[in-house]
Image (cartoon, rainbow, N blue to C red; front, top):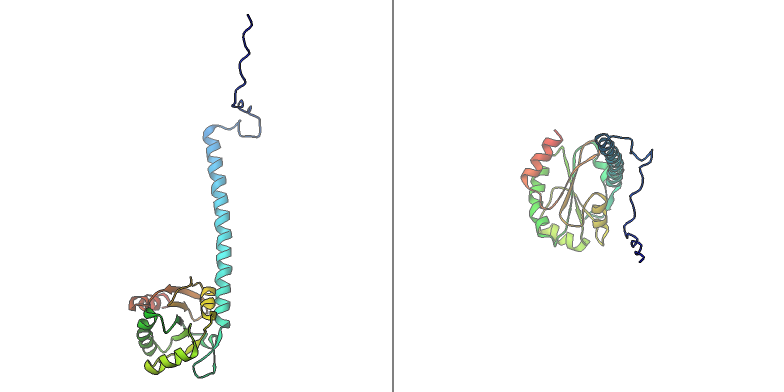
Length: 196
């Protein structure tokens, strides 16, 4: 009586150890090499990310200082005219409740710190902002960027699509902080300390 040959195994046999695949290394050393290689890759990735982030930051700064928009009186407001002193650039709209609530605080800050520039970018229509300006006098300049232009500018400067957005640039023109949401007195104190 013949015995049946064993059925072939569905699992392939293990590969033989060959030189060059790490077989000659002790397990502990192999683990250290794997960790070291992983760390080197992570460092290279972090360096690449840092370079990308710096390029994004530089692009945002270039965009900031190239902004020129119409003011309520029809004249152009060019942000490059404010270089050389700290700048608080505030994106707001007449239909945005937190925006309206923070405007008196920004107005007061401008009066207390004339060495800083506060500039409002109204993401709204000219008629809406003109009507609003008749009800609330502001001591800082307002530029109009309606029709999606204002939100695109805000995104370019690191905004995520909401209002209000405030961008802080130092006297050298570098963006130092951003805040999405209503400004509080503590934010202004912190930013003054940051640029002291």
